[in-house]
Length: 167
Image (cartoon, rainbow, N blue to C red; front, side):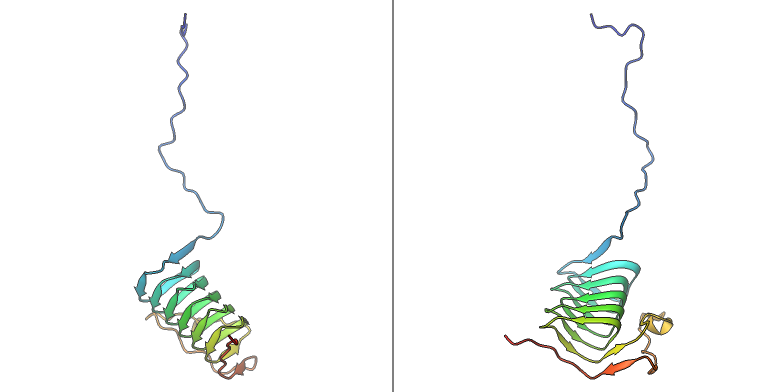
């Protein structure tokens, strides 16, 4: 009744034993979770980093986000930096955003700066046409940030600013 009459049975195709590498269509974000503490410099050229834990050291990346519970004690260098938590150190980025919950103690060198009402900023901010230009803005071999360049003609210096909102 059920015969194959000489035909080979239909077998599903065997999967390819070599795994295929999937390239992500967008950049993945590295997350330093709440409760994680890192000591030392982090260099992640072009990558996105979200810090919800604590870092005691300099951080360099493509886009940095310091979450509400995040704390960085060190210098930040990035294309863009968004601070919701706390930073004790200088920030050097093309675009810097301080959210209303941010607390920054250190100088900011930027091309674009946005400060929401309620953010606390204690330091100096300086506009520079290209804050990431040259090695002066990078992390030196020893993991230390080089000092900012001498005053340039296009720089504008603003005194220490503390922004707070009324309760």
